[in-house]
Image (cartoon, rainbow, N blue to C red; front, side):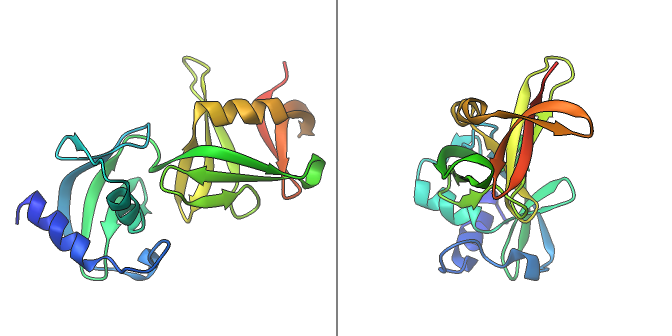
Length: 186
């Protein structure tokens, strides 16, 4: 079966419900990899060409699953591998509700998913050891993160307050009563 036929067959199997499908409940046979890639900036590509229709990207985003370090599009009867350069989503907006330790940080992704930073949706910052450049993430769904867009990260930096973790000083943000470090104070 060609990649194009696989993609069309996959689209026909996607449930028409709103929100992510229950992919964690589906364990179909692996049908191989298709030429689909999600770039670091959140652009979805099929056979090297950007998918320009946001509703189609949204539809595919509802059936993505991560198993270990691999990503798949999954339906009840088919599982195909795709490539993800960094994270499958990008957090493109931030809404701040309230203030202080009880403030709530609500992120919206490039596929219109929302997550409020908290116990179920933690924030983390990974620092590149060579460049010291931070890469911030929020857990959007089970095992699926969103890279926080640079502009949104700047908003977090503006909200940052000092805090202590294990005797070390950090700058971080509060959401749902949880403190999330975003950078060390040297």
